[in-house]
Length: 229
Length: 139
Image (cartoon, rainbow over all chains, first blue to last red; front, side, top):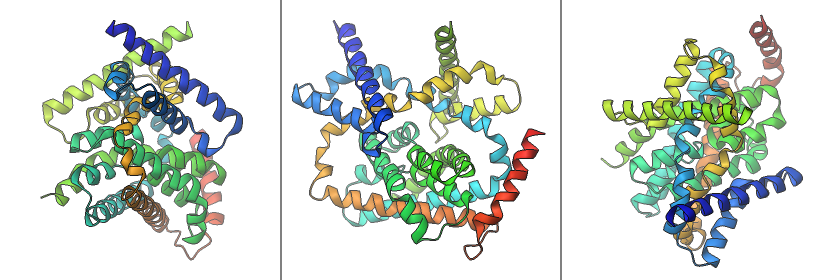
């Protein structure tokens, strides 16, 4: 019975995702991103049919288990772009490290000074890192992975929608700067936006996104430790 | 046939994840096991110990459907719907401000490092240098 229920929820999850992905392919609007619409639909249906999150997770757990290998698979695009990484290592590392430090500290300090509890503050910490990695960092630090996942989406939309204004307003001029900035602050959503600024921006952004995940998982615990010790 | 390959390659990625996780626990690393697995695979690819053919179909498959894998984790937000109202909106403002800061600081640090200070017309200068990079790659 439990297995049937689990399989049912997996099929439900996959079907909703595939439908939403099809919809996005047709209209290409940022608000139709499957990560957003599919999650929204799942939540609405669960609430509507009065199914608890724990019940849904009997099947959800199966999909969750693939998050580990999903993170590992990021080694492949990074390997394909190893030349981009090698030639721009100082710029990519310098940019992501300073950006991550400023991003993590500013988020923590603002949230903490507004009186939000530790679980919210820690869930904010990995917001600029790609979801699969951010969830695990948040879990390890004592944050809440679903809060983090939503925060990561908000950080992504900030870059994907606000990116062009930020680039103009703050005079970001080089393609490398645009790419590394978008990839570090807004992960995959930023990288999709980088497409509009040329080939170099995209490759820089996707390299920065992966480097940001690696660097962020190292300095994240450090920043949290400084904050709460 | 392609499907079997994909499944087998996802299995290989899973083994890297398990190895990374074991290594993380063994050495008490503060980094998630999956990141250790990523670094392990990246290193073995660079050293040509693992041929890229062994994981390219599986990786491409997972990455193409990536958003699907975090729907269950994200759906947990149904127990925290309060963040979309009242004081929760402050948190959203914090996220947006902090993300803008992240992007600006990152971009300007990178530009400063590549020697394209914000006063120079960076875009124009960076292009020829990079097309050279492309050529070197091909050679």
